[in-house]
Image (cartoon, rainbow, N blue to C red):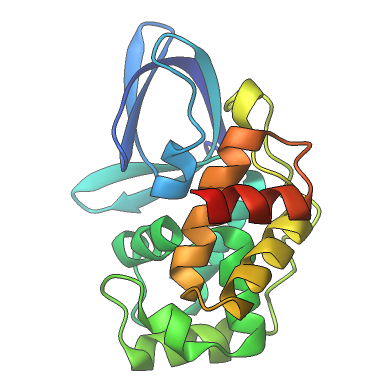
Length: 202
């Protein structure tokens, strides 16, 4: 099993990255939350990967952290009706801390706003993953080779900042996106207060 790939980032879009390694170019499907953390083309990058084998294809999926990869695997293996495409869509809409928080709290409203996710699928995510959420904790630290200057802050600070914005009237998905942007700007040492201020400032 290919659990990671490290090489030169040849090209990237919000949902794909091409990594050159030993003369080969590997197309990797990625969520938007990983694309946000990629370095510029030409830089070295490492992604934590999962290969999905089908009768007619072998597809490689990549993530900024091992925890994100493991959560992706949880969704496609344990949630009825959620395949790789839908799981990637869910992880493109919300960061891992926000996803885990929504599942733990049973926030069907936030989950059902992910593209392609209806209320029934959101309910299945909660029912089938609530007991498993957190099992990937401890491996969620960003890999320094993904994007050394612009890593987001720890998941605890991220969750607290999102919660604060929601309390101020933001929609959960909008709050998560604003905090992700703030984290990329401020870097890994950003405090919760700093993330909130930056997110509010735009």
